[in-house]
Image (cartoon, rainbow, N blue to C red):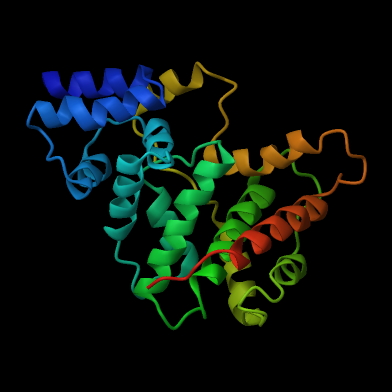
Length: 253
């Protein structure tokens, strides 16, 4: 195994987020293996093989200036033109795992929504719509494919949950129904690195996968709330939070 790749795997497999930031900004740059621009670092994280996808997601979700610039460059490297919404999400999430921290997820998905709308300016009226719908798709994916969720969301529920998200207007029902059917049939899965990396990540059994973590954030927060027992209750609660956030989000193309 090449020495640099060995160091990369070891560092990304053992480091915490702050150490990963140090690794990206100093180790590779000083070794003249990666340029110091956000675009060059993003290209390395996207294209290099053998990297720990969980720590890439954690790094991309950080709020430090360099991490934010790298995450923006990472998202901007995708050409979503003509892609269906769920296909774009699949492509975007293939190279990393969504972090378990809500604020990190928020930053990443907000940028995804902006990028998707820039590539497809006529699909939604604003990036706010794509932002809320992206969360809704992730929640649907968890609801449909997590065996812990007993009361599954129906297509009608999904359509109802997304009522009025397009600047007060409804996304066409046919669009939402097709989206629901594709997600229900085909789970969004992150790209796995290799067996060795999977085994290393499995050691920490308390670490949630990115998609499941979103639903579990709410489950933990409302674990003692007897009024929030069904999937529908969880979805509605999350949707209200996302809609409120979307109303405060600026749309910049």
